[in-house]
Image (cartoon, rainbow, N blue to C red; front, side, top):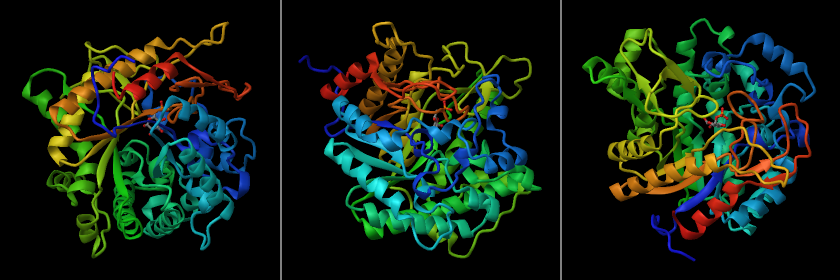
Length: 485
Ligand code: BG6
């Protein structure tokens, strides 16, 4: 076989990523409780640029969903039936040569309501079998503890993460899964895209905006609790598994200035700084000064207990993982400028970048920039745990799925990632988002496909659920074999 020209460091973790709530389905099987994801309706008909509409949720929708026993309107309830089909899926991923699969443990399988004293044994057994099967295929699990799937009971009875009690409940969940899986799982991530709470408080924080007078204040209170919960997860995890690596995670939202006017540069700087606030706390171990000013000017006050500052300082993350899909443009005054959106937020359109079919700006160079930015700032290992292209795929008559657009997306991003490694960035690995087609997070669509493995299911849940290899499947297999391009 030909040698790769862009070779990655030995032991580089090539992989894929999914999340329980978007893949497992079986939303009420084996005593699983209802989670925030089970409330989400298909929003395929919403204008793709209406990111506010995509992020919206109200009390009525929740009340209706809570009493609806069917999965007809709630695609995440059915997922892609990974719950039953994981042996076949893992066999395909094994064939691809994946070294690592990032997935999450659904809190509601282990503690259906979130506040029980004892875990649900059936839920624990499911992940026993899943991890065992992964190891049989030589695939290392990278487990996210919280990926947009908190128990609805905690939302309704405690106000989600605004309650300090939820820190304890999450701590119990962490201890339970650490104890149970300490021999199977070495890599953990505490919260998926912890910064998402400011854009979609419900999915990240279990905050129903209608139920709070001051939503912004509730958001920062909940976020503080998640910072503490994340620090405690690092503490408990290291006590039980001294060798384990426990990381935090960010949505990287890189902003360029619209022009070289200092005002635009400052606007971009502010947005970038705000994006890094979350990792500043979790890696540098304290609230940065620029946020103290922000809180003061906005009159935001949230409760911090004695000892919190010490917890944040002591139990910082071992690595920084992040998702990267697109970049943004900031301007001091964006009125009259053309706008785009992507990944639950919007900005000014960048004339230099192509758009995906969902209007997300595709920017491989941005990945190199963000890798360098994060590494210069924190000097700890980085992990790209999500990167991918949502697209409409077509199955040809001969059963082939020619997703050359996806291959070129990945190729260009991997090239830039390799440049960043040459720049000196310490990079643990790369897990492509949606290694297998799954339900999209923001719009709950099935037809927004990210996978290298196709799943025969449409937006209404019709289809055989059969799995098929796309062209990108074979391409990525070769990348992994050669450890590069
Ligand atoms: C990330 C999430 O923000 O983006 C994933 O962690 C999500 O859960 C992914 O699926 C892509 O977004 P979407 O809305 O296209 O599924």
